Image 1 (spheres, rainbow, N blue to C red):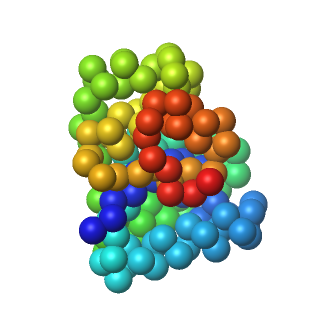
Image 2: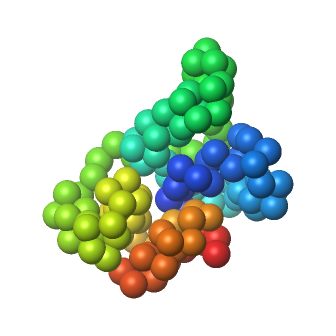
Image 3: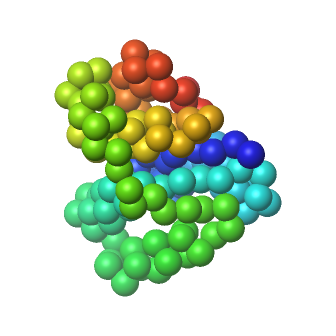
Length: 138
């Protein structure tokens, strides 16, 4: 079964209308997860970052954010990942991946055999390529 590690921007694209193309793309992945055709793994850091961005950037009420998070983690095919392999993380950060949060996502991906990162962030995609880590969305 395919395993995808979701980046914050893909999760934000799913719940907002900032990019209908991205929203449609990630919706297809979540549909596959709901049908148990794949697993979407969400690092705890991504969930924390998502809540922060929805609150501070999009100014979504906290109660609404709580409902979104509750619905997301209850979806079939979604798993939260709390553990981070710090030696792997520190091997990726600050080079070749300069952003610490992105390096967390990459480290989780490296720790799960056969997984790939779902992101729309072109700089992160380039850094993942340099690190030899697969991506799902380019």
